[in-house]
Image (spheres, one colour):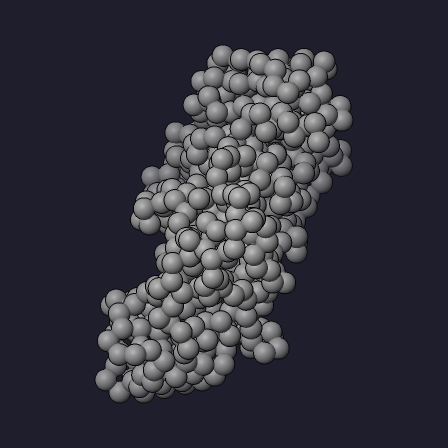
Length: 466
Length: 111
């Protein structure tokens, strides 16, 4: 028996809009990622191979779970398109689905089960078809043995679904599992007393108060006079400062909760507090009150940065004289069109005003200026200041659409020349993103040098330089 | 790079073998573009490919566009994680219909 787990991006949009840094498939319910519940259940049903089929990028999931050997199963991944229906999913994975009974999870929903029950006999006795349905998904069997149609099915063990369509669902579900039936699932953490699950490396101040039921993740600091619980689920890498009160609430991973903050019946993550009852989200700008504990962002190696700056300096020295001569002539000819733009300089949405002039590609001087890429000359100072690279992503203007785009584009690294120019990719339909993502994943000093040269050469040979 | 061709369910299935990169992406593209004039619905099986770079993806996108323009279709077959990861990393997987079997990909045109 095999299982297919299929989730589409549109089904988890509501979650992404609230908590961007958390992968929806790794969204935690009682400190256990959503996907692991489905995997555990599939194993209880006797599945030895599971395929995750989705249009969401799964690199983070793959980095965490790999080929599924941690569970003793084979976990594989497959892409679908947003418009694909159930039949297309099966057709695109026909090699995986062949000659076997399939357990299919479709959508974003939670399945209540009991780890102490054996589901394999029950599922083997089913003839196929839909088994459970809720407003956000369904569980079905495909290719069940036809002989089973005439046979009575084994007695149905516990099996219920809960739709996951709002923060209220996550909150209610998490608190319900913690307070009523934690024994049904394999939950993380050490439990020395009933309803108190404590992770590794948890530091609790002597004057802090812990009232079960509680669940506390790994690497958590709880400072003096903080009151945790009843009904508190604290993620990993969380700092709870003194005099806080967290009752009936869920705190996501990597969160700092400042002094004297009282959270009752809330879901907290990044720098937001969400009231599950009305769904109202409050962004707190004061990082001393509530903020995300961020790991240090990966920096471009020192040597790489140094080489980039040396290139910028050399380019400035070489092009200064032609720039001064050409610009003054082009300005007189009104072929130099100065333009100041507010642009996004990193994926966190930081902006900077940059001069991005345009040159009319007419006349000898205009063509010569474009040949030397003099329209990019004003950007070189930003490279020296460490705000831009010499080669990298296309510079995006600070617009609402682009701000949304870079939230999904963590490797965004704006530069004087783009990888798309080096590869002469069309500047349309966001296809330039494909080549940028490819090269950003492989960036190195040598790799960037070659592409920088290619980009400059391509501009020389492009008939109508942009 | 070696390019094999076979017919499955009346549709041509092209299987590039080896590397599809800057050195041969242009040749691959022009060869396939020629085929599209005769056959508008094609399958490219990437299962025998060892390496795919941005130029290779560019070639696939260009072929995909041409198929769309000719009101045909392009389906990809990808069985190996290595190539699938490249398509996913670049988000090119959103543009293509990707199957795990050539027969299913060719058969999908019949529906």
